[in-house]
Length: 158
Image (cartoon, rainbow, N blue to C red):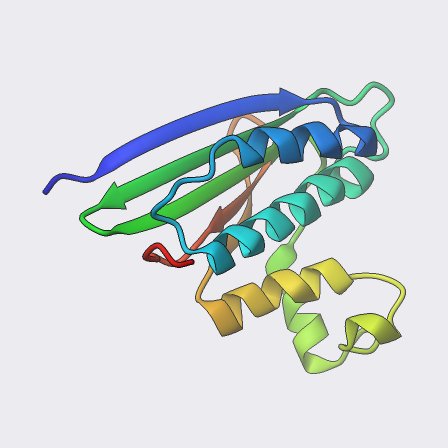
């Protein structure tokens, strides 16, 4: 059986107030084949990535452009794989180096409840290490950055 790909994209104002619209848009695309645990993880990672783009990546821009969000669902047989992309126009950011520093203890406490910053980055790191997500933050050739959130393959669950 050939894989089926469904792709959606939208643009949201670079504002925390747009988070409700982002979640509404995301909720409209929930596929039946996707495990509910993966769906909740994706929703959480999407909000974290979006709020980081608003606050940090584009926070210093005087008139920040909209943030682009893409969602793809790849289905084959009885499995589904969700891919999210968040595109911002901020300066470069080395996510891998921050994760290394957090893992080595070079920054504040690793317990999100004992820290003032980076708790969302720890959550994203745990999605990678404990739940097999692929997460990357790359500079785009045309400028700006892309946060890729790729869920592991899943089967539908209750």
